[in-house]
Length: 305
Image 1 (tube, rainbow, N blue to C red):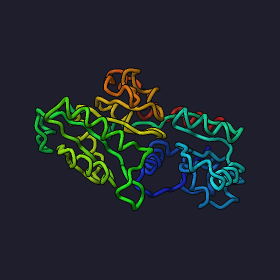
Image 2: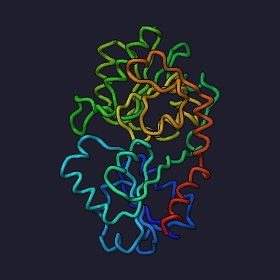
Image 3: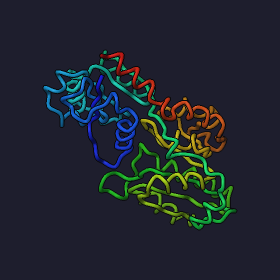
C-alpha cells in the first residue's frame, strides 16, 4: 500500500498535515502519484489539478472539511457530483460534515479528526517567564484567538463562519469581568477584530504570522482561548489547546463535542456560563497524539484497497 497526498502549498494547516504524514509514515507513502495505490485529495478543489487517468486507476480518498451555503448552489453541486465519480470514499474531521455529505453521495464516509503533534504543541509550566518575554503583565487576564477574521481582499467585512462578531460580543463580557484584560491575536486578516478592540479600548497584541515555537508559547500565555465560529471543520485550535492544557471554550462546531467537556461548549445565549475543563480536553486530545493519531487513517486506507 502506497499513499500519495496532493500538494496544496497554501500555508494552511493541511500543508502541515501533509508534511507530518510523510515524515511519520514513509513506508506506506510516496511523493510520486504514479507509484501510489491510493490518492488522498487533502483539499477537495485539488482534484482539478490531477490527471483524470490517475484518478481512474487509483483508489481515491477525498477530505472535505465543512459546508457553507455556497457549497449547495447549482455550480458547487455540479462540481461535487463530477468529482464524486472518481472518489471511492470521503474523509471528514467533523460529524456535522459527515451528515451533510451523506445527503449528496452513497460513498463510504470516515469521520477521523486530525492528529496532534506533541513535538510542536505542549505545556510550558513557567508562565511568568513567557509573559515577561511577550511583555504581558502577570496580573492580566489573557484571551487568545489565533485564526483569521475577514473575507479575502476585503479587510473590513467579518468572515461570519469564523464568528469574529461573536468573539467581540464575548470579549465585551470579559472586559466587564477583568479590568486588566489583554487579547492575543495571530493569523492573517485580523483587521475586523483589531478595529473593534480599539473601539473598546481593550489592550491587544497582534502577531500576524509566527512560527510554531512562538505560537505554542502564546497558547501557554493564555487564561482562555475562545472558538466562536458558526461553521468549522476542526478546528485544530481545540486539540492544540487541549494538548497544551490551555483553557478553552467553544461553540459546538467541528469535533468540539468529542474533545471538550459539556460545560465548555456554548451558544450565544449561554456563553457567560461556559467553563473550561482542562483535564477532559487534555485526555481526549491525547488520544490523537502522534503516532496513535495515525491509526484510524491507516485503517481507512487499508479498508479501501
